[in-house]
Image (cartoon, rainbow, N blue to C red; front, side, top):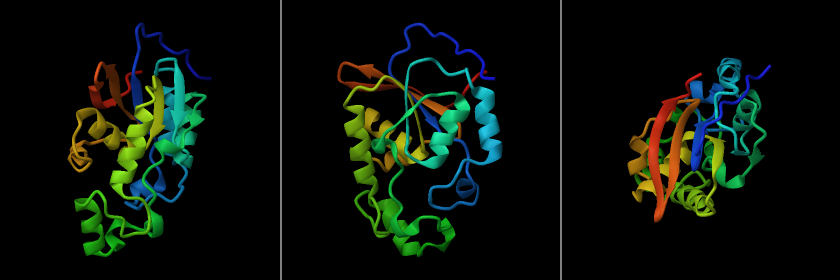
Length: 191
């Protein structure tokens, strides 16, 4: 049974939660619609009720939706919160990608050698969603969180690659008169 949510006065802005671990994450593979693994969901269930009340959104990814359920969130799927489309790399181990193609994708935010989505396209999609002024909780993967941080900090998406974003960690953005401020990154939820 989920614990009651803690009331947090004055909560505004966006709390981004990285979804629970999946087999693909543990095996260093590009996303392929994997389910959240049992250990990750158990950790998420232990956090149920520890997040503030409010609107909630989720990536359409299976692991994100399952994480929302485990957290006790009634979240609406939002296409803008999807991880970058991995194209032909879906489900492929990082080590099995041609080194030059992977290097190009990592170094050039406009590159999409896999027939999927470039990281600059992901960043533009996330920035457009942030432009709607969401306030609440969004459960998604690391690429989306890094894109949100790049937007908030007004830096290139490649610079945001330097942020660690652990499974079930939170990143909080608060609205500012001219955009977003970063309140915290990669914080563990306190129960």
